[in-house]
Image 1: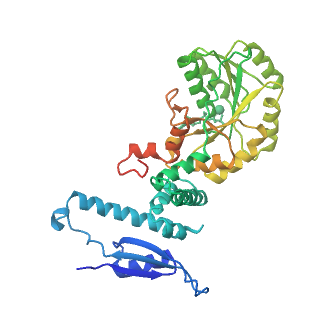
Image 2: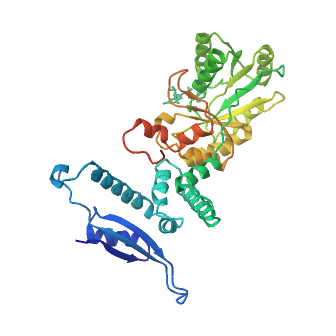
Length: 378
Ligand SMILES: Nc1nc2c(ncn2[C@@H]2O[C@H](COP(=O)(O)OP(=O)(O)OP(=O)(O)O)[C@@H](O)[C@H]2O)c(=O)[nH]1
Ligand SMILES: [Mg+2]
């Protein structure tokens, strides 16, 4: 018996409610399409047409229904696509246009949202991907899947740069300061990077702490330095810093640890800016925790921009499944990502990403690989 039915509505939400009212929550969507308004009726509206059928009843085992593995898989796929539709249907930014014009885009849009990319950015990525794909189709070019266009679009927004590789043939060490809000992992990241550079890359590494606020801050860095056998100094002022750098002239790289402070604390920000924005050419790396929400990341970046950061360092990606906000952040304040950290272990939990690795972190592919279930991106 053919139990398919076509539902017409003014928008996708209305169509989904009709489907649900007729077939219940297990309904299967077979297809959707948009019927543009008739040119003869300029005051009419586009119509959304959804073809659906009832879902199979719940509560029966595979043996009872006679379902085999592939049927179960296809049911799961249906379920995922319904979930995807529901998750994007209620959103703004003309989402229903995307859904109707490129049905395959729904799952991709939902996957971007699940990875933590903002609605606005996810919409713009999928929209541009659809546009590029259609343009290529019109030009008679061979097109691959929409997914590839979405990935290409994501790649456009991100940048990764290994800032700590350069060889020291300038006669002076590369001095790199790490700044950012409190507790994001500046000192721990410095310890990880120092270990990587000195033990694996055989560089001469020096450490300086200019954190004179937190009790035990210098001792924290010093204890890492003594484990690795590295030279470590404390500086209380700009003059101290210049003096310490003078004593570290023979190093390839000097990593400077700064005191974390609220991005709303303007006085401390100016103080830090005066110490590190001086005659000495110091590269600045803005450390942000991936557990911070995008709004606060944005606020922090605006405030720390007085230090003219060269790169981002994102920490604690092991504590969130929503690394997509890194893409929002990087596309809004264009700086390359130099380091990512994914745990508390020193020195292991450090990633020096290239663009490909960064993308896979942003899209949550690495987390997906550790969990069960199908991946959207493979
Ligand atoms: N889960 C997780 N924890 C981390 C990571 N990086 C650092 N931490 C932890 O975050 C806490 C703070 O780390 P610190 O390195 O002291 O942070 P900080 O930015 O130097 O802190 P202040 O100097 O006080 O501003 C410690 O418990 C670290 O072990 C990471 O990648 N993942
Ligand atoms: Mg610290």
